[in-house]
Amino acid sequence: MHYYILCIITSCIITSCTVYHSSLDEVLLFDTPAFQDPDNTSNSLVSLQAFVYLKQLDLTTLTSTLTTWTSGKIGNSIETALERLKLFAAVGVPGMLLSVGVAECSKQATLSATSGLPDLSLSVMNASLGHCDGGNTFTGTLLNADDVVTTTIFPSGTNGFGVISDINDTVKVSHILNTIQFIKTTLFNNPEPVPGMPDLYASLTQTLNDPPFIYITGSPYQLFPFLRNFLKASFPKSHSPIFSQNMTLADVSQVIDVLSNPNDLLDYKLSQVDCVHGIYPNKSFVTVGDLTQSDPEVYAEVLTSDHIADGAHNSNERFTAAFNGVPQTKYRIYTDDEVPGLALIDVAGGSC
Ligand SMILES: *[C@@H]1O[C@H](CO)[C@@H](O)[C@H](O)[C@H]1NC(C)=O
Ligand SMILES: *[C@@H]1O[C@H](CO)[C@@H](O)[C@H](O)[C@H]1NC(C)=O
Ligand SMILES: *[C@@H]1O[C@H](CO)[C@@H](O)[C@H](O)[C@H]1NC(C)=O
Ligand SMILES: *[C@@H]1O[C@H](CO)[C@@H](O)[C@H](O)[C@H]1NC(C)=O
Ligand SMILES: *[C@@H]1O[C@H](CO)[C@@H](O)[C@H](O)[C@H]1NC(C)=O
Image (cartoon, rainbow, N blue to C red; front, side, top):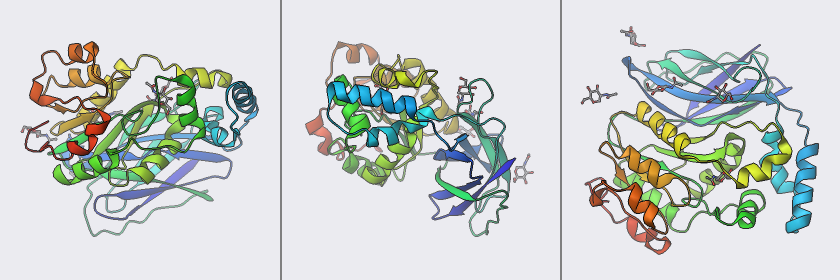
């Protein structure tokens, strides 16, 4: 079976992408960066991630897990949590192909949407869109289609600045150090931005001349729809692709434990930062993270090249150790109440 993506240019910066698929399956297509093909500089690549799953979800285990958890600890109704977590119950469908085309680009590409058995999880590939250029009208082919999903492509040039940002407790209030609070903010409450950060990121889009933002998070990809909606609503100027963790739960009843006890993220985040580097080898990156996860170590390691790092909440020895050897002018540790002032720093001019 083939699926087709139809993509419509909405502006020169942001392209939206639409997938048509059959009524039995659902497609999760991630927002993606677009970049110059290193092997042919007149072509564009997109880093596509997709997951196709059976639309019919069996939520029995998830429901009883959440019911048990809430009755023990908090009084919330489980509806919101069920909606946010439902993809953990999703069953991947093998052998699905998405045909991808973008308005104003010369080529279509085919993505195998779900990685193979036995995992049936997230699939990723670089797809060549050929030569992309303004003014062409895109025509897409539509087969076996009765449902539509949309996503967004964020192209950026080869030079200038980019911004890599963490999500938990950097842009989204997550209370990562307090399990009950963390589960409440993740599963039940309306997500809230860290005060001052939307303004800071909006100002970076100006001072850094429209840098691509990339959010790197330890959150599993099943939370992508929730996180995307949050960023779209709270960070409209820096709404961007999210690189999330590829994680399949063998036992859905473990979901709360897995979410609240994340594994060591150092290697994962380093590999994601490397990936962003591969995509934009000639850009300089401003990196923003917090201290509760591996961010200082990750960003410090990345600073072996000429990058600028922003810092984290609550400094401690670990932070100092991580940044040992990194010039003081290349990073900054900030506290919540300093966030508004960060917009005044001339990052593009080399200050941090
Ligand atoms: C996700 O993990 C599965 C195996 O666990 C692998 O087959 C697949 O390629 C991975 N996808 C990504 C995007 O890394
Ligand atoms: C590079 O891509 C362009 C446009 O897609 C194509 O016309 C050209 O033949 C390619 N060059 C090489 C060396 O493959
Ligand atoms: C960040 O929050 C997500 C929930 O949005 C959670 O799944 C993930 O484990 C958290 N990461 C860390 C390192 O705490
Ligand atoms: C996609 O392309 C970038 C840049 O060439 C490269 O660094 C990255 O490894 C590629 N990813 C995949 C999955 O092939
Ligand atoms: C990056 O810069 C180097 C040196 O200036 C240049 O040779 C290379 O083509 C550039 N790569 C890209 C993708 O622009």
